Image (cartoon, rainbow, N blue to C red; front, side):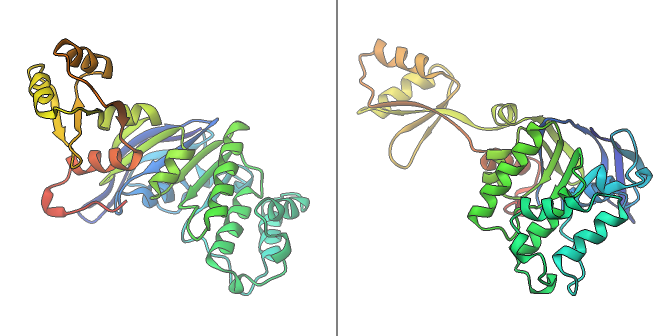
Length: 304
């Protein structure tokens, strides 16, 4: 497991991360979400011993990262700043990592094959595209067959095929019992791959929960109703104390009643219904709504 307890980092009077406490468990893909400047990268760097916390601790499998004798065999990490020397070939880069961490040399070929870089193994890193460089970073993370994967924006530079490949890879790693923590701003992708979410903003924990629970608790669910007499039905529904919104197409979006309850109200006044459907907000909508409720309107739109 990854255990963060009261992680705190300050730069002068500015608190970047303020007392974060959460646990990332094995057997699931955990999405680490937050808008730009939320403190995600700083938190990941503290977990990996690259930034010293002012308070709190980060433990991986019960130990601090700096205490791991051969870290690549315990933690596979990919940070946006992790760029190998441009003059090295992909093969040499991975061989050096394998040797320094006492990883069997056969794992180099296996890792290259796993990320689809076998044919580019002897090319210099400086000639790689952004997507190829990202695949090489993932190969390095997988090299030691570690029980923990900690990945920062792993889909950057990948095309649609590469993103789908990564999605399947992450799910397979979690299914094998590994602990997988993924930081990403791509909400649509996170909604398809993450089982659990840790959401932060301004260095504070906003949510630590399952995907479905997050959307149910913080998102907007409503029933869409189409009827020949929306005004009449709207007045009937408002008597029940519901939240009602008239959409641009004339349909009603009703929060506070189930579809069955709305159907009963319409039937009691002999009002026909052309549509009665339940809708749940997307991960992106829910995330933006949660973060937006904590920020003044003067700050404008939140970037994720």
